[in-house]
Image (cartoon, rainbow over all chains, first blue to last red; front, side, top):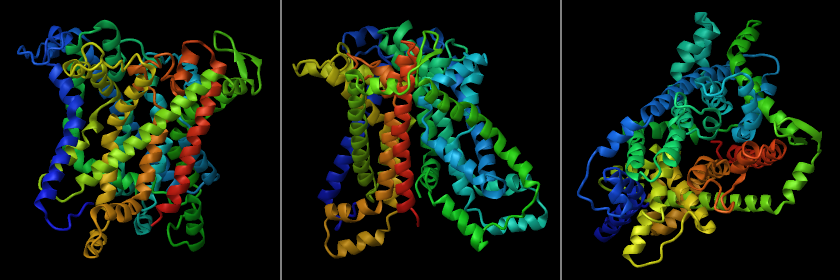
Length: 276
Length: 313
């Protein structure tokens, strides 16, 4: 925190100046991209950035001539399902580690910790063979099933669940709640913030997946937006910069609006869940 | 990640003091455990444990074009890799990339977070703007920057033309291509890093700064003597996260340079992908995967250990 010793006008002026310059630098790629998306491709190719022929033609072209809507829909479905699945399965396994007593509990927990250290990128070769043998290629299932749960999510929720006051457990034992009832009606609501954080984290993680979907999907029916954009950019419409930028804008604008709305929530959740 | 109190110690505490959870030691727990833990354990076994062991296994074999293991090769795949100049080059370019990305992301993120933590009218607007790249996914970031780097129609090219400077070949010059990937990665990471650091800086007690101000400490001094030490666990956290993530970088490289030009951005994960799925050399690719795992496991472990020590209040 830069507490200005005395409210000095000159200091303030320079602070604002620096803040504005940095904001412009960070936002420049956006402005350039989005501005370009309104220009005719001919003008872009000639380096004519100040064209007067501003229009939504590129957007219309992106929406009608490319499967971008399908890609977006696929990504939305897969990310949402991944998020829901991780919230369910990670919270269940976290519950087991905190509230249940069973043989080898610590050993299994150590296994989970080890899992967190193993990068998925290093396991793609056998995983590819597995899903191929199971006949899951180019299908929603291949994008979903390996990511139904995560060691990281389990670990994070376990840390949160351990903070649940012991009195709640005692009270629920007196009430005669079984584990499932305690899990559902006490533990989950009590740890709402951590669940939201994990939800956001897993949704974004799925949304940003790249290598795995690229290997395992190859038709427009199941292709996700990240790989879809690559497809557009590299094959079908090479050099049609206007339309490519419009496609990028179609994807990024809704995300940013959601981010603006949820920013406060997200920020506090992230800081609580991520860094104590 | 990372409210790390030692699980083991926590365990012992609960056991010995019996102050926390008084478990109703119930035979039914076993079935609940199976029900609650079963699905996760199954998925992780099939898609994490098994493939890891399998990768280790394949890494010690030669493979045929169908990816089937043929001849047991022991650690030869590893020694071959580590003595191949091409692999060493990959390793070096990965290190350059990872270090540059981490240093730049964290230091720029810190600068932004420090500026945005000032109490000024309208500062909220800047906080929002600085975190904007959090909403940018891999392919969007790549498209924005590919256009900027484009040598004929791109933004940089047009500026250079306007100023009568030589146009830089961002994507065809090996050194520049590396920077193109680094710049894009840093830009994309910045929003997240900024938010985490801002949160951490805002939680430093203001009384510390007030006391320092009374004693006449300059802003710069306060920053280095108060802010940095107080947020050091967070700094460490974002640094290792960025480091680990950039070791695993794939999407941006595929989108921007495809490992080229002349292998200059052919980094660890991209190599695994190319050697396995382009060249069909599964044995070697598996050894590369194991090396990657060791590196990442090391940094993850470091992160756990450090946070356990530092963030335990």
